[in-house]
Image 1 (cartoon, helix red, strand yellow):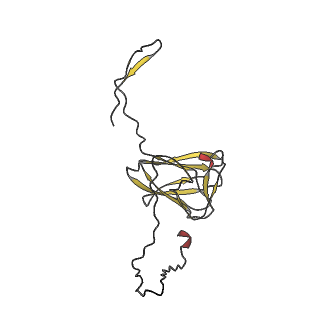
Image 2 (cartoon, rainbow, N blue to C red):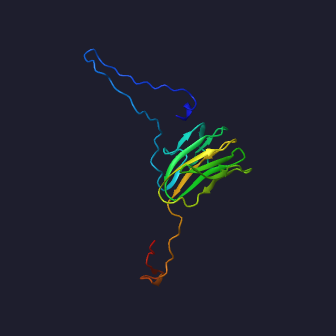
Image 3 (cartoon, rainbow, N blue to C red):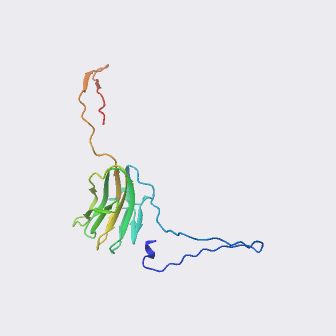
Length: 193
């Protein structure tokens, strides 16, 4: 509905009946207009064309780009306010993008608050540049990436990571001669969280 912002909009409800019945019809009350948010992205790498991304404003896309993740990229036009919204279920977020001279600054909002800004400008074209968040905390987070001004911004992919913390060190590693020539048997106890 963002394309209708600032315009007058008329909604009409119609009912059709036949000559046989003369009932009152229907009553309309408590109208709400909202945008349904898609299911949160699960952990993993997600291409810019994933169905959970909601692009608002003016965006284009390119395919068959050998430097891009999955050979595709979405890019905004030169108009401030273009945005993409999605939800993640995880603690960390990585944004994969193309840095080059025709791109500018993107604002990253997490759960409605400005979280960070990314300058996508680079005099040398750099594919698969990565911005990584700090720990966002567990749970579902709504992420919105907004074009701050001119020039444009782009989205190549999103990586949703649930845990960057390394596992605990193995302290009881033991090695023994294996059953056949040139083999070794290793044993250890898996560390807990």
